Image 1 (tube, rainbow, N blue to C red):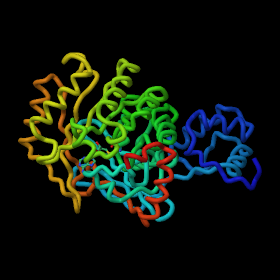
Image 2 (image 1 turned 30 degrees about the vertical axis):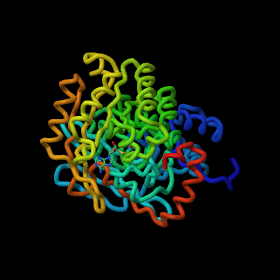
Image 3 (image 1 turned 60 degrees about the vertical axis):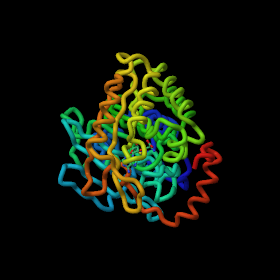
Image 4 (image 1 turned 90 degrees about the vertical axis):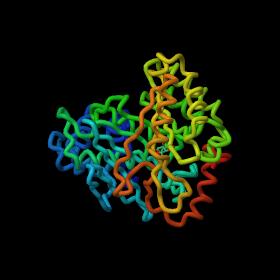
Length: 382
Ligand code: SAH
Protein backbone atom coordinates (compact mmCIF):
# COMPACT_ATOMS: atom_id res chain seq x y z
CA UNK A 1 0.00 0.00 0.00
CA UNK A 2 1.47 3.35 -0.95
CA UNK A 3 1.33 6.11 1.62
CA UNK A 4 -0.69 8.17 -0.84
CA UNK A 5 -3.54 5.64 -0.85
CA UNK A 6 -6.69 6.55 1.05
CA UNK A 7 -6.96 5.11 4.51
CA UNK A 8 -9.23 2.11 4.95
CA UNK A 9 -12.21 2.75 7.23
CA UNK A 10 -12.19 -0.41 9.33
CA UNK A 11 -15.92 -0.05 9.97
CA UNK A 12 -16.47 -0.93 6.31
CA UNK A 13 -15.11 -4.45 6.86
CA UNK A 14 -16.62 -7.56 8.39
CA UNK A 15 -14.47 -10.17 10.16
CA UNK A 16 -13.30 -11.76 6.93
CA UNK A 17 -12.51 -8.41 5.30
CA UNK A 18 -10.63 -7.24 8.35
CA UNK A 19 -8.60 -10.45 8.50
CA UNK A 20 -7.64 -9.98 4.85
CA UNK A 21 -6.73 -6.36 5.49
CA UNK A 22 -4.40 -7.39 8.31
CA UNK A 23 -2.84 -10.23 6.31
CA UNK A 24 -2.62 -8.69 2.84
CA UNK A 25 -2.27 -4.96 3.42
CA UNK A 26 -0.51 -4.82 6.77
CA UNK A 27 1.38 -8.11 6.58
CA UNK A 28 0.18 -9.01 10.07
CA UNK A 29 -1.35 -12.11 11.64
CA UNK A 30 -5.07 -12.46 10.94
CA UNK A 31 -5.98 -12.81 14.63
CA UNK A 32 -4.91 -9.22 15.20
CA UNK A 33 -8.10 -8.31 13.34
CA UNK A 34 -10.07 -9.95 16.14
CA UNK A 35 -8.45 -7.76 18.78
CA UNK A 36 -9.28 -4.66 16.79
CA UNK A 37 -12.90 -5.75 16.24
CA UNK A 38 -13.33 -6.14 19.99
CA UNK A 39 -11.89 -2.70 20.64
CA UNK A 40 -14.29 -1.17 18.16
CA UNK A 41 -17.52 -3.02 18.87
CA UNK A 42 -17.17 -4.11 22.49
CA UNK A 43 -15.31 -1.15 23.94
CA UNK A 44 -16.30 1.60 21.49
CA UNK A 45 -12.67 2.64 21.01
CA UNK A 46 -11.89 4.38 17.73
CA UNK A 47 -8.42 5.68 18.51
CA UNK A 48 -5.62 3.19 17.74
CA UNK A 49 -3.44 4.64 20.49
CA UNK A 50 -5.95 3.33 23.06
CA UNK A 51 -5.73 -0.25 21.77
CA UNK A 52 -3.29 -1.24 24.48
CA UNK A 53 -2.85 -4.90 23.63
CA UNK A 54 -1.39 -4.05 20.22
CA UNK A 55 2.34 -3.33 19.93
CA UNK A 56 3.53 0.20 19.25
CA UNK A 57 4.73 -0.67 15.76
CA UNK A 58 1.37 -2.15 14.77
CA UNK A 59 -0.49 0.84 16.17
CA UNK A 60 1.70 3.13 14.07
CA UNK A 61 1.05 1.01 10.98
CA UNK A 62 -2.68 1.16 11.61
CA UNK A 63 -2.49 4.91 12.06
CA UNK A 64 -0.85 5.16 8.66
CA UNK A 65 -3.14 2.87 6.66
CA UNK A 66 -6.45 2.79 8.51
CA UNK A 67 -9.05 4.87 10.27
CA UNK A 68 -12.26 4.25 12.18
CA UNK A 69 -14.94 6.71 11.13
CA UNK A 70 -18.29 6.48 12.90
CA UNK A 71 -21.37 8.50 11.88
CA UNK A 72 -21.67 11.87 13.59
CA UNK A 73 -24.67 12.45 15.81
CA UNK A 74 -26.21 15.72 14.64
CA UNK A 75 -29.15 15.60 16.92
CA UNK A 76 -30.86 13.13 19.24
CA UNK A 77 -34.28 13.03 20.74
CA UNK A 78 -35.63 10.81 23.50
CA UNK A 79 -39.38 10.10 23.51
CA UNK A 80 -41.56 9.85 26.57
CA UNK A 81 -42.16 6.15 25.88
CA UNK A 82 -38.43 5.24 25.97
CA UNK A 83 -37.98 5.44 22.22
CA UNK A 84 -34.81 7.29 21.20
CA UNK A 85 -34.07 8.79 17.81
CA UNK A 86 -30.71 9.81 16.38
CA UNK A 87 -30.15 12.03 13.39
CA UNK A 88 -26.80 11.05 11.91
CA UNK A 89 -24.96 13.40 9.58
CA UNK A 90 -23.80 12.01 6.24
CA UNK A 91 -21.61 13.77 3.71
CA UNK A 92 -23.17 16.31 1.37
CA UNK A 93 -25.43 17.75 4.05
CA UNK A 94 -27.63 14.66 4.22
CA UNK A 95 -28.87 12.98 7.34
CA UNK A 96 -30.39 9.64 8.20
CA UNK A 97 -32.42 8.51 11.15
CA UNK A 98 -31.99 5.58 13.48
CA UNK A 99 -34.55 4.71 16.14
CA UNK A 100 -34.29 2.60 19.30
CA UNK A 101 -37.53 1.08 20.59
CA UNK A 102 -37.54 -0.72 23.95
CA UNK A 103 -40.51 -3.03 24.61
CA UNK A 104 -41.30 -6.18 26.56
CA UNK A 105 -37.74 -6.98 27.62
CA UNK A 106 -36.37 -6.39 24.14
CA UNK A 107 -34.57 -3.44 22.66
CA UNK A 108 -35.02 -3.05 18.93
CA UNK A 109 -33.01 -0.73 16.74
CA UNK A 110 -34.56 0.36 13.45
CA UNK A 111 -31.68 0.85 11.00
CA UNK A 112 -31.59 2.67 7.64
CA UNK A 113 -29.95 1.25 4.52
CA UNK A 114 -30.14 4.19 2.11
CA UNK A 115 -30.36 7.98 2.22
CA UNK A 116 -33.96 8.35 1.06
CA UNK A 117 -35.58 5.65 -1.04
CA UNK A 118 -36.42 5.15 -4.71
CA UNK A 119 -39.35 2.77 -4.46
CA UNK A 120 -41.96 5.50 -4.04
CA UNK A 121 -44.38 3.53 -1.86
CA UNK A 122 -47.37 5.85 -1.67
CA UNK A 123 -47.96 5.64 2.08
CA UNK A 124 -44.33 6.04 3.21
CA UNK A 125 -42.92 9.45 4.12
CA UNK A 126 -39.38 8.43 3.12
CA UNK A 127 -40.64 8.29 -0.50
CA UNK A 128 -41.48 11.97 -0.41
CA UNK A 129 -37.80 12.68 0.16
CA UNK A 130 -36.60 11.04 -3.04
CA UNK A 131 -33.44 8.98 -3.25
CA UNK A 132 -29.90 10.11 -2.71
CA UNK A 133 -27.57 7.14 -2.35
CA UNK A 134 -26.80 3.82 -0.75
CA UNK A 135 -25.25 3.82 2.70
CA UNK A 136 -21.82 2.25 3.08
CA UNK A 137 -21.26 -0.73 5.36
CA UNK A 138 -19.63 1.67 7.85
CA UNK A 139 -22.68 3.93 7.82
CA UNK A 140 -25.04 0.99 8.40
CA UNK A 141 -23.09 -0.75 11.17
CA UNK A 142 -22.21 2.72 12.50
CA UNK A 143 -25.88 3.24 13.39
CA UNK A 144 -25.75 0.15 15.61
CA UNK A 145 -22.42 1.31 17.06
CA UNK A 146 -23.78 4.76 17.98
CA UNK A 147 -26.93 3.34 19.60
CA UNK A 148 -25.11 0.53 21.45
CA UNK A 149 -22.54 2.99 22.80
CA UNK A 150 -25.24 5.40 23.94
CA UNK A 151 -27.12 2.57 25.67
CA UNK A 152 -23.98 1.32 27.39
CA UNK A 153 -24.42 -2.04 25.70
CA UNK A 154 -21.59 -4.25 26.94
CA UNK A 155 -20.77 -7.78 25.81
CA UNK A 156 -21.39 -10.62 28.27
CA UNK A 157 -23.98 -8.59 30.12
CA UNK A 158 -27.68 -8.39 29.79
CA UNK A 159 -27.95 -6.45 26.60
CA UNK A 160 -30.17 -3.48 26.08
CA UNK A 161 -29.93 -3.67 22.34
CA UNK A 162 -31.19 -7.15 21.47
CA UNK A 163 -32.75 -6.85 17.99
CA UNK A 164 -32.07 -5.00 14.75
CA UNK A 165 -34.67 -4.46 12.05
CA UNK A 166 -33.62 -3.08 8.66
CA UNK A 167 -36.83 -1.07 8.52
CA UNK A 168 -35.53 2.47 8.54
CA UNK A 169 -35.07 4.53 5.42
CA UNK A 170 -34.39 2.73 2.17
CA UNK A 171 -34.79 -0.65 0.50
CA UNK A 172 -32.09 -2.89 2.01
CA UNK A 173 -32.09 -5.40 -0.86
CA UNK A 174 -31.25 -2.56 -3.28
CA UNK A 175 -28.01 -2.13 -1.29
CA UNK A 176 -27.36 -5.84 -0.95
CA UNK A 177 -23.60 -6.16 -0.37
CA UNK A 178 -23.29 -3.38 2.18
CA UNK A 179 -26.37 -4.53 4.08
CA UNK A 180 -25.28 -8.19 4.18
CA UNK A 181 -21.78 -7.22 5.33
CA UNK A 182 -23.17 -4.97 8.07
CA UNK A 183 -25.61 -7.68 9.20
CA UNK A 184 -22.65 -10.05 9.45
CA UNK A 185 -20.97 -7.71 11.97
CA UNK A 186 -24.26 -7.37 13.88
CA UNK A 187 -24.32 -11.16 14.35
CA UNK A 188 -20.60 -11.75 14.88
CA UNK A 189 -19.45 -12.45 18.46
CA UNK A 190 -16.61 -10.03 17.83
CA UNK A 191 -19.21 -7.51 16.68
CA UNK A 192 -22.58 -7.11 18.39
CA UNK A 193 -23.26 -10.83 18.88
CA UNK A 194 -26.97 -10.73 18.01
CA UNK A 195 -28.73 -14.02 17.28
CA UNK A 196 -29.49 -14.61 13.57
CA UNK A 197 -33.21 -14.54 14.13
CA UNK A 198 -32.95 -11.23 15.97
CA UNK A 199 -31.67 -9.46 12.87
CA UNK A 200 -34.51 -8.83 10.41
CA UNK A 201 -34.30 -7.57 6.88
CA UNK A 202 -37.48 -5.98 5.54
CA UNK A 203 -38.08 -5.70 1.80
CA UNK A 204 -40.78 -4.28 -0.43
CA UNK A 205 -40.29 -7.41 -2.55
CA UNK A 206 -37.18 -7.42 -4.77
CA UNK A 207 -37.70 -10.99 -5.89
CA UNK A 208 -34.24 -11.94 -7.28
CA UNK A 209 -32.58 -10.46 -4.22
CA UNK A 210 -34.79 -12.48 -1.87
CA UNK A 211 -33.35 -15.59 -3.53
CA UNK A 212 -29.83 -14.24 -3.17
CA UNK A 213 -30.42 -13.43 0.48
CA UNK A 214 -31.60 -16.99 1.03
CA UNK A 215 -28.36 -18.26 -0.45
CA UNK A 216 -25.94 -15.87 1.22
CA UNK A 217 -27.29 -14.90 4.61
CA UNK A 218 -29.17 -16.30 7.54
CA UNK A 219 -31.37 -13.60 8.99
CA UNK A 220 -35.10 -13.19 9.53
CA UNK A 221 -37.08 -11.93 6.57
CA UNK A 222 -39.98 -9.49 6.60
CA UNK A 223 -41.91 -8.69 3.44
CA UNK A 224 -43.96 -5.51 3.09
CA UNK A 225 -47.12 -6.75 1.44
CA UNK A 226 -49.85 -4.19 2.23
CA UNK A 227 -52.36 -5.54 -0.29
CA UNK A 228 -53.52 -8.99 -1.46
CA UNK A 229 -54.54 -7.83 -4.97
CA UNK A 230 -52.07 -6.85 -7.71
CA UNK A 231 -53.97 -3.79 -8.83
CA UNK A 232 -54.08 -2.28 -5.36
CA UNK A 233 -50.55 -3.36 -4.48
CA UNK A 234 -49.13 -1.85 -7.67
CA UNK A 235 -50.72 1.42 -6.67
CA UNK A 236 -49.37 1.35 -3.12
CA UNK A 237 -46.00 -0.31 -3.82
CA UNK A 238 -45.01 0.46 -7.45
CA UNK A 239 -42.33 -2.27 -7.29
CA UNK A 240 -45.26 -4.68 -7.60
CA UNK A 241 -45.50 -3.87 -11.32
CA UNK A 242 -42.10 -5.46 -11.72
CA UNK A 243 -42.57 -8.30 -9.24
CA UNK A 244 -46.28 -9.08 -8.84
CA UNK A 245 -47.74 -10.90 -5.86
CA UNK A 246 -47.58 -14.41 -7.35
CA UNK A 247 -43.84 -14.04 -8.09
CA UNK A 248 -43.22 -12.55 -4.67
CA UNK A 249 -45.06 -15.38 -2.94
CA UNK A 250 -43.12 -17.95 -4.98
CA UNK A 251 -39.83 -16.34 -3.86
CA UNK A 252 -41.03 -16.42 -0.24
CA UNK A 253 -41.88 -20.11 -0.61
CA UNK A 254 -38.39 -20.79 -1.95
CA UNK A 255 -36.93 -18.85 0.97
CA UNK A 256 -38.72 -20.91 3.63
CA UNK A 257 -38.04 -24.17 1.78
CA UNK A 258 -34.34 -23.39 1.73
CA UNK A 259 -34.41 -22.61 5.45
CA UNK A 260 -36.73 -25.06 7.13
CA UNK A 261 -36.73 -23.17 10.43
CA UNK A 262 -37.17 -19.71 8.92
CA UNK A 263 -40.39 -17.81 9.10
CA UNK A 264 -41.47 -14.79 7.11
CA UNK A 265 -43.34 -11.88 8.59
CA UNK A 266 -45.69 -10.18 6.14
CA UNK A 267 -46.13 -6.54 7.03
CA UNK A 268 -49.46 -4.97 6.25
CA UNK A 269 -50.01 -1.27 6.88
CA UNK A 270 -53.66 -0.62 7.73
CA UNK A 271 -55.11 2.28 5.75
CA UNK A 272 -58.71 3.32 6.23
CA UNK A 273 -60.99 2.22 3.39
CA UNK A 274 -58.01 1.28 1.22
CA UNK A 275 -56.85 -2.19 2.23
CA UNK A 276 -58.67 -2.88 5.52
CA UNK A 277 -61.96 -4.45 4.36
CA UNK A 278 -63.08 -8.07 4.95
CA UNK A 279 -62.45 -8.93 1.29
CA UNK A 280 -58.81 -7.93 1.77
CA UNK A 281 -58.50 -10.04 4.92
CA UNK A 282 -59.96 -13.08 3.18
CA UNK A 283 -57.69 -12.72 0.15
CA UNK A 284 -54.69 -12.21 2.44
CA UNK A 285 -55.57 -15.37 4.38
CA UNK A 286 -55.72 -17.26 1.08
CA UNK A 287 -52.21 -16.06 0.18
CA UNK A 288 -50.93 -17.12 3.58
CA UNK A 289 -52.49 -20.56 3.23
CA UNK A 290 -50.02 -21.27 0.43
CA UNK A 291 -47.47 -21.67 3.18
CA UNK A 292 -49.08 -24.86 4.38
CA UNK A 293 -51.95 -25.98 6.54
CA UNK A 294 -52.98 -24.04 9.60
CA UNK A 295 -50.50 -25.75 11.90
CA UNK A 296 -47.43 -25.56 9.69
CA UNK A 297 -48.28 -22.10 8.53
CA UNK A 298 -47.89 -20.71 12.01
CA UNK A 299 -44.20 -21.42 11.71
CA UNK A 300 -43.64 -20.38 8.12
CA UNK A 301 -45.64 -17.20 7.73
CA UNK A 302 -47.18 -14.63 9.99
CA UNK A 303 -48.84 -11.29 9.47
CA UNK A 304 -48.00 -8.09 11.30
CA UNK A 305 -50.65 -5.41 11.00
CA UNK A 306 -49.18 -1.91 11.24
CA UNK A 307 -51.60 0.94 11.98
CA UNK A 308 -50.81 3.58 9.33
CA UNK A 309 -48.75 6.48 10.69
CA UNK A 310 -49.80 9.75 9.10
CA UNK A 311 -47.35 12.40 7.91
CA UNK A 312 -47.89 15.86 6.43
CA UNK A 313 -49.37 15.80 2.93
CA UNK A 314 -50.48 12.16 2.94
CA UNK A 315 -53.86 11.22 1.48
CA UNK A 316 -54.19 8.14 3.69
CA UNK A 317 -55.70 7.72 7.13
CA UNK A 318 -55.19 5.11 9.82
CA UNK A 319 -57.84 2.38 10.08
CA UNK A 320 -59.81 2.49 13.31
CA UNK A 321 -58.89 0.11 16.15
CA UNK A 322 -62.16 -1.74 15.59
CA UNK A 323 -61.41 -2.27 11.90
CA UNK A 324 -57.89 -3.46 12.70
CA UNK A 325 -59.17 -5.96 15.24
CA UNK A 326 -61.92 -7.22 12.95
CA UNK A 327 -59.27 -7.72 10.24
CA UNK A 328 -57.02 -9.54 12.69
CA UNK A 329 -59.91 -11.82 13.76
CA UNK A 330 -60.69 -12.79 10.17
CA UNK A 331 -57.07 -13.81 9.64
CA UNK A 332 -56.88 -15.65 12.93
CA UNK A 333 -59.98 -17.75 12.25
CA UNK A 334 -58.29 -18.81 9.02
CA UNK A 335 -55.34 -20.03 11.09
CA UNK A 336 -52.99 -17.16 10.26
CA UNK A 337 -50.82 -16.01 13.15
CA UNK A 338 -51.50 -12.27 13.21
CA UNK A 339 -50.13 -9.57 15.47
CA UNK A 340 -50.83 -5.85 15.61
CA UNK A 341 -47.83 -3.58 15.95
CA UNK A 342 -47.99 -1.12 18.78
CA UNK A 343 -47.19 2.32 17.47
CA UNK A 344 -44.22 3.83 19.24
CA UNK A 345 -42.32 7.07 19.11
CA UNK A 346 -45.26 9.03 17.69
CA UNK A 347 -44.29 12.14 19.60
CA UNK A 348 -40.85 12.31 17.97
CA UNK A 349 -41.91 11.36 14.42
CA UNK A 350 -39.98 8.14 14.77
CA UNK A 351 -42.78 5.73 13.98
CA UNK A 352 -42.71 3.50 10.88
CA UNK A 353 -42.81 5.44 7.67
CA UNK A 354 -42.06 8.72 9.36
CA UNK A 355 -38.31 8.60 9.05
CA UNK A 356 -36.88 11.18 6.77
CA UNK A 357 -33.44 12.62 6.45
CA UNK A 358 -32.76 15.78 4.59
CA UNK A 359 -32.35 14.92 0.96
CA UNK A 360 -31.26 17.98 -0.92
CA UNK A 361 -31.47 18.74 -4.58
CA UNK A 362 -33.88 15.95 -5.20
CA UNK A 363 -34.26 16.40 -8.94
CA UNK A 364 -30.61 15.98 -9.72
CA UNK A 365 -30.40 12.90 -7.60
CA UNK A 366 -33.49 11.34 -9.11
CA UNK A 367 -31.79 11.61 -12.48
CA UNK A 368 -28.63 10.06 -11.10
CA UNK A 369 -30.61 7.33 -9.53
CA UNK A 370 -32.40 6.42 -12.74
CA UNK A 371 -28.99 5.56 -14.12
CA UNK A 372 -28.25 3.37 -11.10
CA UNK A 373 -31.63 1.71 -11.38
CA UNK A 374 -30.81 0.43 -14.82
CA UNK A 375 -27.87 -1.37 -13.24
CA UNK A 376 -29.97 -2.67 -10.36
CA UNK A 377 -32.80 -3.89 -12.55
CA UNK A 378 -35.65 -2.24 -10.68
CA UNK A 379 -36.17 0.59 -13.12
CA UNK A 380 -39.64 -0.44 -14.29
CA UNK A 381 -40.94 -0.17 -10.82
CA UNK A 382 -39.56 3.14 -9.67
N1 SAH B 1 -38.07 -0.81 2.08
C1 SAH B 1 -38.25 -1.76 3.13
C2 SAH B 1 -37.90 -1.26 4.52
C3 SAH B 1 -38.45 0.09 4.94
S1 SAH B 1 -40.15 0.22 5.39
C4 SAH B 1 -39.66 -2.31 3.09
O1 SAH B 1 -40.47 -1.81 2.31
O2 SAH B 1 -39.95 -3.25 3.80
C5 SAH B 1 -40.37 -0.60 6.88
C6 SAH B 1 -41.85 -0.89 7.18
O3 SAH B 1 -42.60 0.30 7.53
C7 SAH B 1 -42.55 -1.45 5.97
O4 SAH B 1 -43.38 -2.51 6.26
C8 SAH B 1 -43.31 -0.25 5.49
O5 SAH B 1 -44.29 -0.59 4.64
C9 SAH B 1 -43.80 0.35 6.79
N2 SAH B 1 -44.32 1.71 6.62
C10 SAH B 1 -43.93 2.61 5.72
N3 SAH B 1 -44.64 3.74 5.82
C11 SAH B 1 -45.51 3.57 6.83
C12 SAH B 1 -46.51 4.40 7.44
N4 SAH B 1 -46.72 5.64 7.02
N5 SAH B 1 -47.20 3.91 8.46
C13 SAH B 1 -46.96 2.65 8.91
N6 SAH B 1 -46.03 1.83 8.38
C14 SAH B 1 -45.32 2.26 7.34
